Image 1 (cartoon, rainbow, N blue to C red):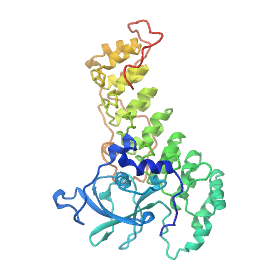
Image 2 (image 1 turned 90 degrees about the vertical axis):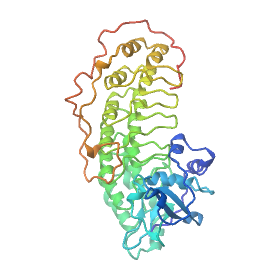
Image 3 (image 1 turned 135 degrees about the horizontal axis):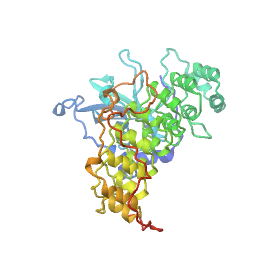
Image 4 (image 1 turned 90 degrees about the horizontal axis):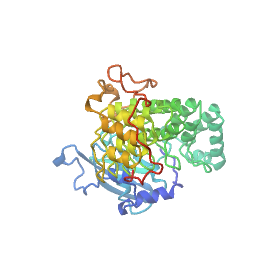
Length: 450
């Protein structure tokens, strides 16, 4: 049984998702949406074998039901966005709606994890057709004979405020007692907009409370009012211990925020100690995330000069040649923003310096136009013989190019990547002699929108 709860927040977010068919969604979201044809059969389409899956959807808040066909290897997150683009009525706080699997044939009910593939879930069927509910996420009570009236009485504003205060004050025993009584920890604080879990992810020494929240019904992919999960919050706070705990509790490293950005993407924006970045990569985080302007993680690392993050991304398979909406590669970004250390890493690792952006400019030309003459000279003089590729790769269990099939029970703490066979000449001193040209005091306008 799930606790009845009416979504009451994030109207603006809801509007952006509900109106996606009119083109109001971000580019990142739009690229994940793939309209499916109207089904005529309730079983797997024999013409595509097991490549597609027909699902009957029940939407209690709209008193609707419909059948939709999805790619079987689509994630629940992608399926959710496809559902939202078919709705003719708005829902509030749509990021916290999910696909709910009712209890059938001895299987417990529960919400499907957003980053798992549809085909990986055992789906209940009705007359041979898999049936799911699309509903607002709330605590799922597996105990028999739950007193719904008592639980409803428990959810007063005063009690929710107390519960939030107990988390801030690290009162594990009081938090646990509220959860034992049946309190649903999936809600937004009326003042901060944080959920109990995202609030805890901001703070230090919260592993026990986070564990209690998870076991007490908190959904790891339940988002705060600003659209972020607890993993995003832990990354923003550079809280490696909390991030590790969340991953060990079963959180996916690929949860998306309201802009479809992953925790890994945020580590590159935040910078600092790269241990959170490596921890996510070791947990098989995807390295293909981009924002609505096509900026990937490698672009952002080079924009802000986060060299260690860039090295980790490249070691785990990030594409150095990927281009943003303006056609700029990571090396173009280095040339534009004078990020010499990042440019050296890219070139030593084999970045193609001849790629042109949408204005027909190479990284060398961008550096000249931006007035970064020393960097331009380095790019020009870099030879293929200077390339030192990685001679080892992440172990298969940590490979980022395949979908994570199951959550590992333990995660080792981040450590310095071993590159004994391939990294001998990477860290070049910037002070070594370079042909010098006068710097322009007022660089000309950007050669292209970055």
